[in-house]
Amino acid sequence: MANEVLIFNLEKGPINLGEYLAGPWEEAKFVSMMPDESLAITSGEVEYSVFVSRGIGTLTLISGEEFELIPGSALAFPLPGAGIVVAGPEGLEALVVTVAIARN
Image (cartoon, rainbow, N blue to C red):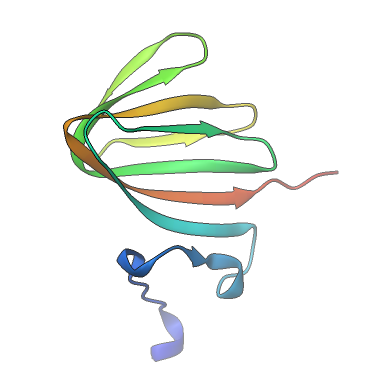
């Protein structure tokens, strides 16, 4: 049974998912942002998914479009996605997962 599930503690640091899972998985990390701290995300060689677990904030796309982030928000940045996440007054915590892009 133990080989049917993998359990990681992301509070200890990023995990190289490619060492454990088949497919294009690269990294999973838990990000804890202080109030007004920003995180720039630009897909290029990898795509990003962000899952907000605590706090609030905003996502601003390069187009200028802005979105409110709350716990439970899920964001995906496929190629060529980009944006800036800014933590709200109480900070923001999120899981950030990167996936390699298959090139033909």
